[in-house]
Length: 122
Image (cartoon, rainbow, N blue to C red; front, top):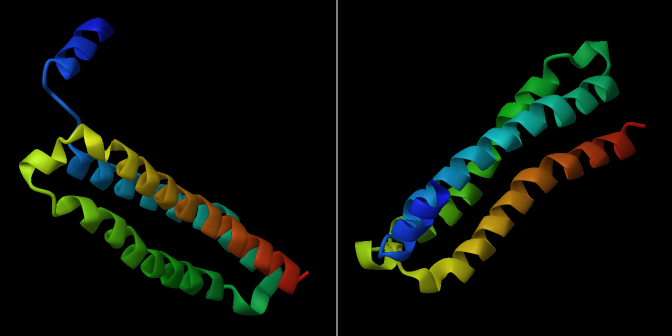
């Protein structure tokens, strides 16, 4: 079965960079939000104590809203391609560069913020 998929790709079907980046952005936002919830918010709750129980959740909303413009920047680079460009194999390197940057942002930001909270409130 994988041989048939590989053959169909080489027979003229190439990856649609627009859809691929859109999928990456959607999944990266989910991962980012999950990391914020389970890592950063937990660190904030521990650091702030009982009197500010709601503050970490407001911070979560702000942090999720803050990442959206960055994700839209990466996605908009690819959604404006025409049909020919969207399937151009020559764009694979640029796609990979943006994909790595997007995922680095989505994963590193919550971890860095958690480290900052732990240092500031330790």
